[in-house]
Image (cartoon, rainbow, N blue to C red):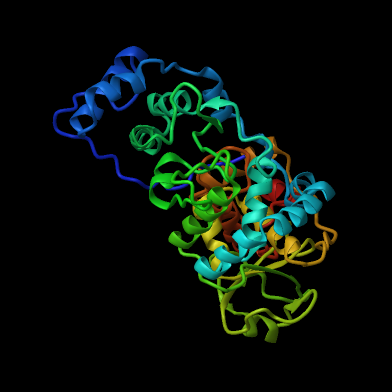
Length: 391
């Protein structure tokens, strides 16, 4: 499910003695270079030999990396697809079953149960399906591939370190196509850095121990900047006459200031009127609306997809008791092919949309809002067929 792995900003640090290509070329020679580099980093030569001895290139990993069409769905469709009655009921049952663990997480890290329950649900259906890709094969394949080698190569050596600790088995450790392991899908380096032995057995076992997985996920969110005890997302209603240029993640006011402009909680009170917040309109001014607090931004350190992040954050509020969101009556959006054409037109006008991939991500939304302002249209960052025709 992960669109982009966590901790991807790690620097690629190669020793002077490692004379290997950074990506591509003969796969066997590439693996031999990794093994040589592992030894130059100080790993035991015999352990490195055993670790890399059975590694294989996995073309299915590359296929998965290139095919993430699910993120082309609009928020309402995506949320309804991911949030089922069964996931709600199972989440409530898991909250009761692991109440002690969630209480420790809230005490130690300041993170509400719903936040981790939502990740647990979306990543692996509460541990039921954790991925069947051989993790080492996936990491080495993605390191060999020249699209993002600097993101995955450090994870290979992190997996080697886990192997030396007795917490990784090259032949049998499996997970997601991008190398994430366990119930909440963490990369090897994240396990080394943030792994917590939640059940006290002396090992960090994210695949088999829910307390380990949940405590590790909570520790990682804290390390990524989660602010203890603060909200992350709240559904709101917006007035028709709101200045739409002020909406979007790149604009903030306090929740109290938004309320003074007519933005109102759909239920209850403003969670934290004093906190800075952004108004999010995932399907424009006629669709659902949310107020995103500072903790919402931490989600993007876990996953880079706008629609995934918003859905995960919203589901967390549902698991904490919030009502089902109001889908509103949004203007029709664009198909994936139309979105690619729009992105190409935006790039031609000098806007940065990130990858031209047919996905309405954060950069494309910002570019859409800017061009709506240029054309004198309501600047709600929602691309429509009318906008495409005008361009």
